[in-house]
Amino acid sequence: MANKPVIGIVAESMDDVNIYSKLVSGNNGLPWQIILEESSELDRVILKADGLLFGGEIGPCLEVVDCSTCPEQLLTVRLLRLALESDLPVLCICSGMLYLNVALGGSFLSCFEKHGVLSEDGLAVSSYHRIYIAPGSKLAAIVGSGGFVRVNSRHQIALKEPQKSPLLLASAYSIEDGVIEALESPSNDWVIGVQFQPERRMELPPHFERLFQGLVERSKAKKPKRNQNTFRF
Image (cartoon, rainbow, N blue to C red):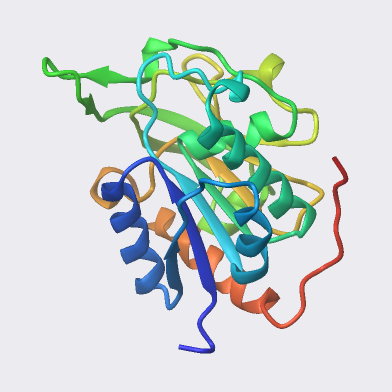
């Protein structure tokens, strides 16, 4: 247990936490659910966690730009900034990718309905589309290939190039409309965000599970000694 890296998980629901925890455990990591309630907890999280995972689905028209109206969202953004400063390995999924963008000064398009489908009872349903992963990107290196691939989609909020933080690189785009499907930080060792949901393992190619493997492995490698801060806010 002592040699396993601690992966802190910030997610929208317990269902998300449970799924991420199984994937972290399956890749020899130690999952730790993080519930953000006070600013004083943030430093403790940074000291204890060897890596962080932010994720969860996004409902229609979720307003995360004005984080001042929601303490939990504000704390999530602050924790992401601290993680970047500490150069912790970070994986951001769906809502997590948008939080990552907002944390570094970006925004998003609200109510972008083309990528999300709702059932009659208002629950999200997966749709599918093709994206292009830039060869030579960190994402391509992690999953093993770049180029065209089909992924799932369960979001109604998105971002395009004008909304992207200048501190992040887009490493994947939707073929149909140019929606950004992946982000990465060129100034950090291992910070990846994806708009699709690789935890839904039967809905996209199996090599995307390497995102969880990569997060755990990089967190374990950085566990003995973390790098110096790379950002100042």
